[in-house]
Image 1: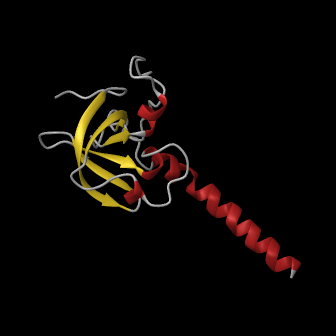
Image 2: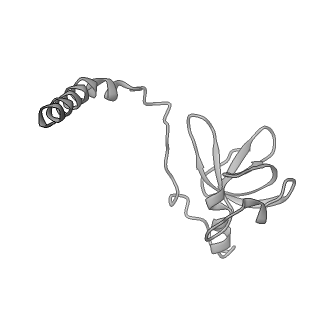
Image 3: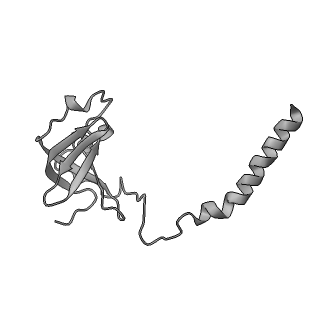
Length: 129
């Protein structure tokens, strides 16, 4: 099944951690409902809202292009009228991109300048003491 951001899907909770719940979406695909996305408002304990083997309807918030990880939300469905389509662009963001291969080059390019600034601060501290 091809997934897309904003799509409503159903799945089964396969595991719960303090930070969120893992959801089987069929086949070998799995997503995560972060604790902040399981209910509107503060959630002290995710177990108050979700249980292992519970069937859930969720909205796909994000699909990481590089890793294929899927972020899910129950909270979006709490606020949505089921007749209202989900805005597919509201949550779109990419943390990684397999088309960009700059890696750590920007950091390496600035490293010498950062070292010089740090050394200057150390020298200034030593002269002021």
